[in-house]
Image 1 (cartoon, rainbow, N blue to C red):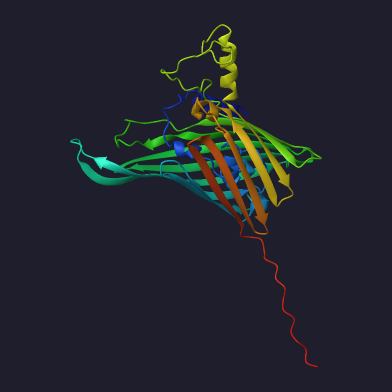
Image 2: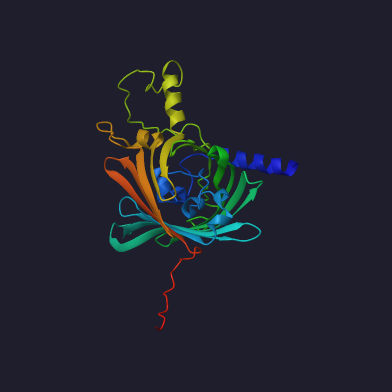
Length: 358
């Protein structure tokens, strides 16, 4: 027991020691499925048969996910795009998953030191993921992922190792679930410079907590997610920003009346609030609000739907389709599509009757 406590304390110390903006392999924070995009970018506390969500939280792995697969594609901004794949296989020891996460940033123009164009080059990030999950007394779920991440910028490459550790509490009788996950805890094995001990960067470690509650007599589920526990103040410090008012809700002073507004604004940046209507197992309709995204990306003149996200899912027999729309700014929207397949479910066919001779 003492050894377990030492490990937990060490993990928390490393996670909270990080400084935002100095980590590499940020693509590991991309939404792993369209359903996650519809819920504000993070959805790791729903215990359900969804192979796409399990890639982000290995504690969701269960025997009922045996031989299920997910494919996901997300066209991003400025010609970049993200994709991932996951396959789940159940064994007596635990339920395992084997996946990959991919990010391509498009083509860039290469110049030499004199400004002469040299051609085009690509920038690509890839991660290979292996995870396992196991249940304890039905209500307690545990899981872990190991990620080998590789990045290439022209001829420069970097290599890193990251781990996810997660735990869930699930009470099916009360339609309630909660999760705690430490994401991307690891280290960079090789930096872009290629020189040992030089240019090493931190991994994008984060601690996330979420709860999900469905109402007994209403097909609606409410989801609350807390993220970015590794840093309290996640506001962007814009030196060009000018305060137009001294209201307590937008005064940036650290003390005095304005501190109330600053505290509330910063607190809400750590929270994502979402909801999902679930009509049986065949259809779901979701929405969410991400205050951090809206506060950072909404235009001052016209905020629009920045920070909001929407989505739906349809499941027919062995196949399911999920679509998520994430509104970042008025000029940028992410459309995420996921395909779920159950390779283990048998297709029932009717045998043709043989005609009988009269």
